[in-house]
Image (tube, rainbow, N blue to C red; front, side):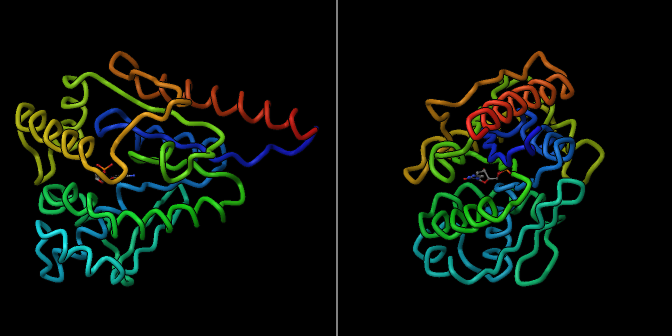
Length: 235
Ligand code: DC
């Protein structure tokens, strides 16, 4: 029997669809690498805020786009993210970064730089990689072996997101969460540069009525089918 082929898997969709938990679990169970591209945009945003750049001024963000040195660790059992050597995994989840990240990630110079980091991580991932984001299947890795687009109803997404934040100092009401998600989706889907979009050849999974484990199992089945197909194609 030939070795398991290394696959590149793109998982896109808005937040609150279970994208991160699913992507990370699939990578861990199948021995693949894992890249959270939202964390990279958040890290760039953290750097801009930390260095006093006006994140509502696209020209100022563009001029500084090349400065932050963003490094992602792709082990799914403990993904890491540093900017200029500083661990930013906690502050990038805070409300300041969350409120500014859509504007920063809409700047083409930021996208060009981070897209290059993402392609390089995918190229160098020996055992294959699960890359999650908004534009992975459409723009970053259009030749990915498998593309998945996760969706969920606004109610399910808001409930999941506020469940994640409950008990943290970022906790907010369900209604506020739903409004914040809708605002961020509208910004991420309507921007000119590489908006959130489903690739024509992506498999769509609506996660509203599914448990996390059910979503993970569906994705694993799809990955294994592609591995078999690739094994036969190269046998
Ligand atoms: O997945 P997340 O919520 O951590 O992503 C944070 C923001 O980053 C999101 O509002 C849009 C942006 N993003 C993007 O523009 N492209 C990606 N591939 C991933 C995230």
